[in-house]
Image 1: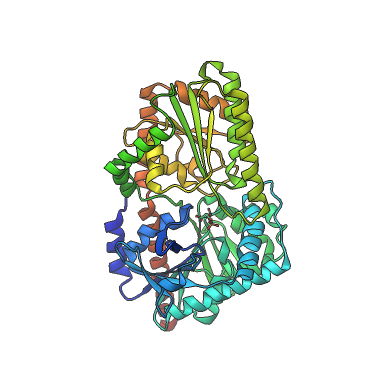
Image 2: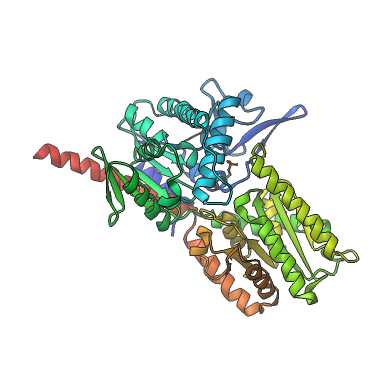
Length: 504
Ligand code: F6P
């Protein structure tokens, strides 16, 4: 099991001479203007939160798009700013992407094309040639910034996600000395589903520029290898999970991502969280309303998260179990996300309508079955809510990992609470003690809620204890250490191979 200290040690020992560059589209800290002041905020979504502790341990450079309206005035002449603001320990290098490029690269190609393609969701992917061209250009803009940061020295470049499939090849072509790894945070679809993608060869060639390519699950690695095998000239070795193309080897490995368990638990114990819990109690009138069970859902508003399905499940539960009417309340937090895209607006409106309809149908006296809070909350406020909730529902229709599930478990140091979890999340492979459901089956969700509210304390404790152990033992530092160790081995082995070649 790793922790921040052991990761720091590994980095100090092994990466002394080497720069460590992390690349993602979303930046970890955003500067914006509020009245006359500049405030710093953290974006919603797992990636930035998960990688920040790794970066704090590494002392490296994080290269990401500047999106805040005060981002430009807070960087120096190299577009650098030291973060985290309260305790600077690494450098954020901001990259500027203009509005049209952002529309076509991020909204268009990444989120209307690759996102639905990889999630095999029932929203049809859209592939516009103009978006692909902008995707290529945005990857180029990032490549320039990375090469500038890397300079002439040896460097590890660790790229995040589906926004940058072309970047690895671009980097390797211009500086073959770079060691390049990429982690694909979302699923990789099966080869059949991938057939629809119009620029197959180019995207696969881009990804095969990596020395190491990581996915959340072994299953996604297998899908990727099969996709490569069917679509591009290369030698795929499924047993060793690698691909040879043009004399270059790409290792393909699973690295299930996680959270900073220890830091999360420390926050959960804090007096600030106690205060936030009091706030929630008041806001939800928990002490006066006669509510016995609180259920929660916390998601970015995204059609892959199965929010309407979960509400239908709750509705069916109230129908099937009249004895619980007036006694259970469900709070759904929806953080607005990618709202420029029509399907995201549509799901947001759908959820609002469903909540109104359910409240009209079931409300009685002061009891409303569902409360929908369409806004951002701080991680601390969410931990406070986890601590109050008798059950947490995650019903993604398809999800690479889902860190909300792991966060809920980590918050429950009292070993209480029940997790209802979609079988179609990466997290379900680890958290077998959750109540696992098919999110498309409304009846299964309803029954899982019934099971959650009637579960005996001993059973809740047994399940929660095992899940907590799992998240603690496979935390974000293990994820980072496993990736780094793999990279270091690769470097050593390729150096050895070169020596052997020379000796012959
Ligand atoms: O799950 C994929 C992912 O890109 C995460 O890595 C990220 O935290 C989340 O989606 C939010 O996405 P965006 O940066 O588009 O808001």
